[in-house]
Image (cartoon, rainbow over all chains, first blue to last red; front, side):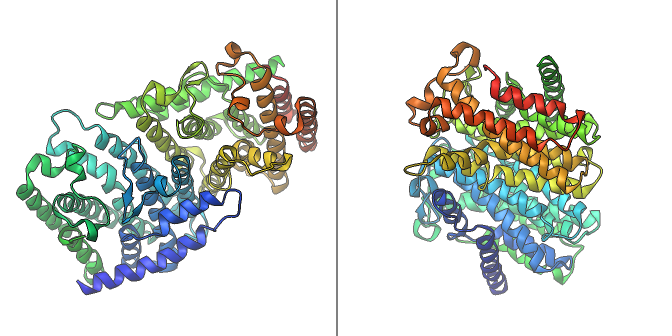
Length: 294
Length: 294
């Protein structure tokens, strides 16, 4: 697993440099907005989505210089979603990655607006010529990211997470997780194949891999919420249970949920079977996603 | 002025049809999200931004079928900004266009999320092939809209509106208004020239027209807030004053603010001097923006 952790850390450092350049410090009087955007995006975090963008792009011969811009866009989106999810009207969290959430460190209006500004920034980055020489490629990135984070993706998933259907089945939970978390993971992996103008079959394999890996990742996250260590995780544990959230665990139980994560991992790896050694980083990432302790 | 009002109403009807088609009703369990998005976008409203998109596009020979999609995107953006501006953490308004605001008609989480979903939907619409056959044109639309509504535009303007600099000058207020309202008006007018692949000089003229018209429009809005009729406006009057907002009126006084709006109108019309009869709808719109009673 050491290769994966080395890669993850290296890509995180590079992504942070690109994000920092795309997020100027901002001058008074609106400096607070930029400060909040930087606080949310440049703080601690695994930078998993950037890892998937850059690693998938390498599979299709795309230079890191290009994929890192898309990586930054996915991290802007992920950060915005965390800021808004943490708001008092949503999950009402005051701790995230061991630090006060944005509405606690700043204020609620600034938190809402920092998220609102990160969202278009991601699209601005994708549409810029520096991201890819081909305009159709840039349009495709914009389209796919927009779908992943809209009502049919991340936002719809958050609605379902806040108000799950009565008598939720495992299918309901899986659908919610695929929308809320899976869609942006899927974009992150598909983005490499879009940048590399890969054949449709390769794009479909990347997408399918990411959807299964993302769901496995989420179940692992739920298990950590139940059993993990607060200090290692940098956030409160047991909050799903306290909040009465419906998860794979509440429906399947711990053992069956763990088995489900393992079988999703196998499925995810199966989607990569057409690829050779170039897919090794993604294979290791999927294993990490399920077996991690933080 | 009858031509303008007829055009405005006709374009509004067509835009609503396009928006409605782009916003499916949505099925349970996440129907509430789609209901809130429809409530926010398809309710009463002038649809000024759609008017500017379609009218400017006609100047450059662009079919309404294309420009109406961009018109819908600007209205999605405008609606999202109103939903979030009305939130308790921002302006805390419970009435908008004579109806309960979205967080009152639904709830706060749904209001935040409806806005969050409208934002990417706008970019999805712009990036789609149906909007324009040329990918570079679609990328340019995405780039310009993203800039207009990001930290350097609408969101930054809202930050300044909520926390104006101490000892604000008229210049500070004008900068805030150009960011908060002007940038999306400017995009709406520039979009027609982008769709029509017009020369740079024409694009610059459209942009400059819209920035001056937008600021004049905003001063007129502030005057209406002070002097208007609550029933006609469908929102509370005098709320700027109560909220201690800094506006052109609080700095310049009523008479000088009115004179400023008139001189901005002249400037706006001046930017259209290179155009002939095809710019007549935009000339009438600018006059309406300043002289309207609602």
